[in-house]
Structures are given as structure tokens and as C-alpha cells.
Length: 305
Image 1 (cartoon, one colour):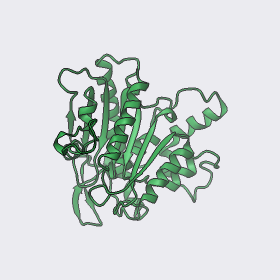
Image 2 (image 1 turned 135 degrees about the vertical axis):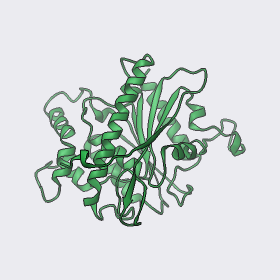
Image 3 (image 1 turned 30 degrees about the horizontal axis):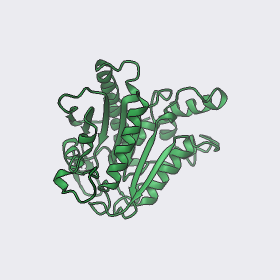
């Protein structure tokens, strides 16, 4: 088990976009940026990426709505990662953990655990804080059901680990939405968690690090198999996974692997493929993926009513 106390965390500021004026606070989204970015930059780029307009497709970009426009009662929380030394680029850059290669995330996986664990711990703290804020806004009975966790690229990878490494597997989130990302240690996670497999029995295929991290969820899954599966579970969290077929940085097969592992664990996953997004396919496709995200967030909102 990595001692996260030995890591100089140095997380950056949290950028927050409050609900629009005159609207109550009903939901919160915590969204994690990709490598080389910050919370504020991610927020700016996300809210510059537009949805379709209700009046049709031939509307100028400056008149098309954003997620914030369509979801005026939502609070948007954008944490910032530390600046981390990247051995591949030989420089410090904002990153949640060191990913030696996005083309092959299994390269130098030994470098990933310290940053992953510190970042997941940070995200868990953000979830606790935002749950408290929702309670204070008058949603004491279902605050956690009004919260969405997600991210893009490296941020999506951390969000996945926060979901699977939850210390409260009996409590679902309102939703989980990621784009253009992958699951670190995917094969090891599948070995320990996927239904129908001999979980955690082959140490050669797994790792003590992964086994220890997902232990709370593993115990929860075993208990659900033995007891009434209608009890509340993190598996009740609806999941959205979007990925570009032409993503030049994170191959779509890695995104498909995410969908496969999550489905194998027991989540209900909405998988969507796109083509033609900016940043060589490594971004949220406008307007199709933004429209799908808006619909997903609407479903989350309706579940909490």
C-alpha cells in the first residue's frame, strides 16, 4: 500500500461555477481535467463547447447553448491537479498521476500508484465537501444522488479509480460521466472485480496494490451475491462513457475496455462513439456528445426528484 502521506500533493485551486442567478442549487458536477490543463482551463473549454440549438442546426455558434445554460441549477466544480514530473516529457506539467504513455497506458505502470492514490483521496474529499454543500442547500435526504463525478482523459482515469475504489460502495452517486479516457490497471481490476471470474485468486494477473484499493467494492459485490441484490449499491450509479473513433491520443479500444470492465463489474453503461471532435478527436464532440451529456444529466436530475 503506497503511503500517500509521503507525496507532496500540491493540488491547484478549485474552480467553481455557481448556479445561474435566480436559480436554486439542485445538483453538482465534479469534473476532472486532462493532462497539461487546469480546472479553470477545462471549465472555459467545456463551456465554449456548445449543444444543438432548439431552433435547429443553422444557428451561429455564439447563439448556441452550453451545458451551464441548459442546466442553470447546477454547480460545476473543477479541481486542479498538482504539477507532476513526467519522465517521458522530462518536465513538470499538471497531471493527476504520471502516465508514461497514453498510447500504451501499461508502460511503466509502476509510476502510477502514488499519484493515483493521492488524486483519488483528493477527489473523495471533494465529494464529501460537495455532498455537504448540497445538504446545506436543502437536499439532506438525497444529496449524494444529486452529485455527478466525471472527467476527461487523465481526469477520467482518476474518476474511474475514485468510483471503483470508493470507501462507500453501498452508496450510489447521481451519475458518472467520462470522455476520451482509459482505466489504469484495467486487467488487474477486471481480475479482482468482474462477475463470473475467480476474483483475486491469481496474484500473477493482479497486484496487491489493485486488490487492496478495490477491496471495499469487492467485499460489497460478494455480499450482494449472497444477499438481496436490491439493496443500494454504487452499481446503481448510471454511467456515461464517450470516446472518439478517431482519438489520436487514447485509442478507442481503451475506451471500449472501460465499458467492458464496468459492465462486467455490474454497472449499467451508456457507451457512445463519435468522430470529428477537436484536438484530433481527443475532446468532446460538438454538438452530438454535448447533447448526449445534457440528456444524461437530465436523467440524473429526474432520478433525484
